[in-house]
Image (cartoon, rainbow, N blue to C red):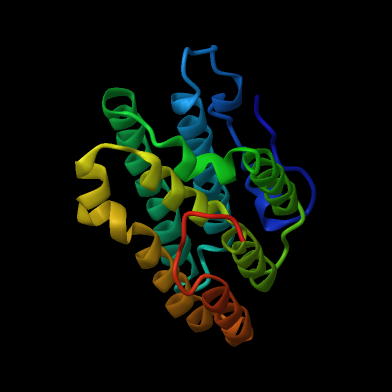
Length: 204
């Protein structure tokens, strides 16, 4: 399924589309571990596609292109880490109570990502694009990543440095770079950091 942007925004003029990975329509499996993690992976990849689309639309504005390219790369990296965690969970097990608080919340996050994708259709300015970044990153999708990693029983997943530091590095990138692109983002980035002073594997 593809949704092609239409209208007069910079994105529409580039005919950006959002191919879906189909993670929400997977075959039934004996355990819901893979399905939960595949849905988490899908959230990361949907964010990546949004950031790539915004980069194409506003990439001719100085540091904006590299900023969105960096965000897209980070979302792909998170998806890759979650894929490793998914495979490890299938082999080593899954501590369900680490993720249970989030399991019923996943549909809400998917709906929020639906809304973010729809909002891209209306983006016509850089400030609006950056506000969409804040909207996506202010959701609990980053905490869900953290909880999914915590629920994976494989020791290498819990101890490997990239797994432990991925979300904090992502948040630091946002807080440092957004104000460089627009001074209007200073307050929003402070609020973002205050919302996630430390990423925790439980809902707020």
